[in-house]
Length: 130
Image 1: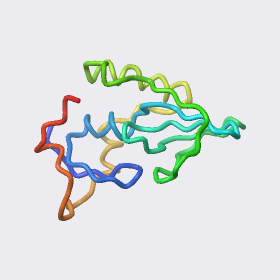
Image 2: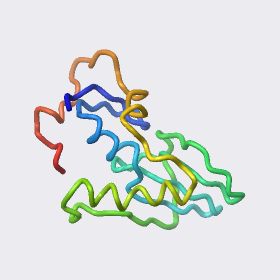
Image 3: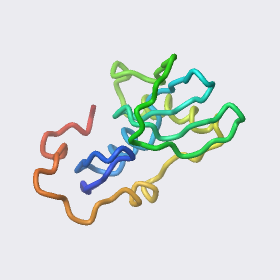
Image 4: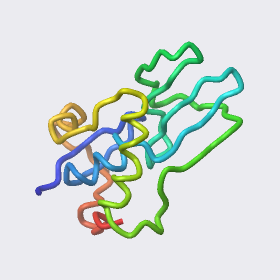
């Protein structure tokens, strides 16, 4: 799968294949619990992606918010050797909140038309297996 230029929910730019971007930017890496009872799912870049209010309402989170949390848990670690293992541990968190699993079509919404100068090129560094 060829790399594309993407902008993550928090505004970071990446040049990567869709599966790489989906797992790191659109799937949850963990969950923060806040003092007021709000829960926030964050991605591998530690950007908020979804939040659930104490009332149970689930909504997209502000990817640039600095979340003040009192609890933190991770769904997988870098010790999970395969992409399949990491995805299989992240997906249940979305499903438990009634959210869909992101697809290649969802990743297209985060594509950037033209990479800017100084673009971070993970593709050239070969980080797709991590």
